[in-house]
Length: 256
Image (cartoon, rainbow, N blue to C red; front, side, top):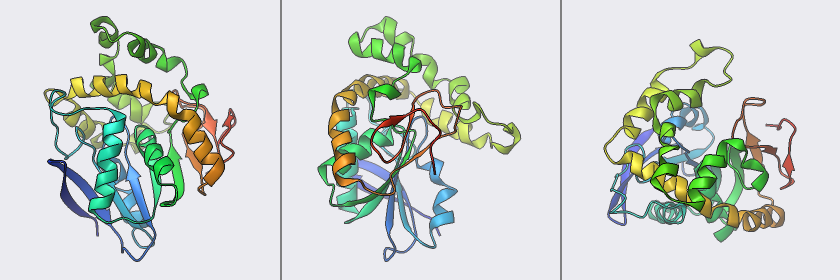
């Protein structure tokens, strides 16, 4: 049975889903943009007989607190700090990391800092290579270089319903297999007053991740937390190239 809990971290309510016995190996599931722990709602019960699963919502996402950009430092460093304190608060000692999208730079920060705690990595659309920043990223890179209203305006489409729906439907062979609840629930949280500013802050902060890529790659090489897997929709991913456990970029389809 999945339980739905909240823990206070630095004065913020951090919501999380949890299932499975703590006697089993733990998987910490870190969601990406534009979603929340809701993305793991089906995976958690499917694995709960063999694993202990924990999936938090970051500040500004899902059912966790959403302070304004003036009240909270929406950076990947700060989100990683919150998740690190969350891990301590619920007393996780060793765990595998399932990281998706934004969850990757958060999880990689934690893994590189505490390699002895991380037993394996499962990576879904989580970049750690310059080669992964393809054409899609050009307007975002421009925003890193100049945080101007003009450059911000070019990114605001990313929080529209059309863009959120695209995240789920692009490249899908059978659209009737995709529940509209997915993008509808995500969009509900994105449409909250002030959330657009939060997403722009994190898009800007994403520019702090590429300088850390060499550090994360060294972590991959040195510790090789197996299985290091890259989960993508082959031939449809617009954001990244593919890579596997060699810590070297690949252009071939990944294994799972």
